[in-house]
Image (cartoon, rainbow, N blue to C red):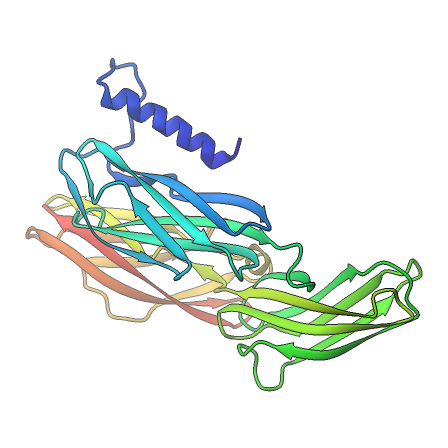
Amino acid sequence: MHYYQKIFILLSGSFLLFSQGCSDSAPIMPSGIYSTPSVHDSGAVVDTKEITGTFQIVNTTHKVVNIREVKLSCGCADLHLSKEIIPANSFIEARLTVNLEGQYGPKYFDALIYTDNTTVPVIPLRLSANVVTKKLDGTIMFNLGLLSSEEQINQSFTTLPGKVNSISVADIQYSPSFPATPNFDITAVHSFNQDVKLVITGTAPSQQGDFSIELSLIGEGSDWGEARVFLQGIVQQEISIPESVTMGLIESNRSSKNIIKVTGQESFLSRHSIVQMTVINRLPEILSVRFVDSSSPQLELSLQHPGSAGTFSEAIELEFMFSNGKTTRLSTHIAARFL
């Protein structure tokens, strides 16, 4: 059974016991407002047109939470909520469905549920999958994977077994995300066992998002003659942080601390470390942000009560420098309530 399914079943069972008023020895749901699971991983899906992730939006407080708005990361996604409010000490169901037409490779789709709760103004959901297409209009598909901006590519693929005397590459077409003159070298050779080896070296686009390279393989003396090949990859930011962070309820003369993990592409972080973090915008005196270079890079946020009750909302922009001299900018939104 999948890891997230195990968590889902475990938390669902606990919630039933909680809602039925069980004894003190029964499992207790974590307090607050949250989604379980927060990430639904569909794994590898082969020749699938649509995927769906089911989430429970839990409210263990004694107040009803109203849903104000829902934002989706792409037009291919749709979110269905069983209710427009989250009852006190209860939950609602959320179903995130994604149309995979035209999608290929590792993908994730996000939904943000905005609420009227000042402690948890945003509830994030994520549906991820590795989309595999065995056949697309007779085209051979290859996945270049997740890459950082302008990352060097050096990959090879073996395909088209069978008799062939010679092989050549023709009619190379690059997606618009590439510069006018792409820095690429694509060659094909046939081995002694008659497999065709396609070798791709070059530089990934600087623009984030999907990119593709399409080409033809011409086989002299082969059974297949000509084959169309489609290479696809995804350029993502080297690292990422949550879009919003909640510091919770802060009592008078107290402060709140929160640790945020800096996540990123393993292939990039294994070769380049974060050497410096700089806050770009000016922060209020009661808020501090510190980069902690531990075994897992993270940010330490500290928010001090200002002396008067009210709500706190602040957007911060951060610049990270890597050991290879490259920099990237990220932003997040900090929210809290002062008692």
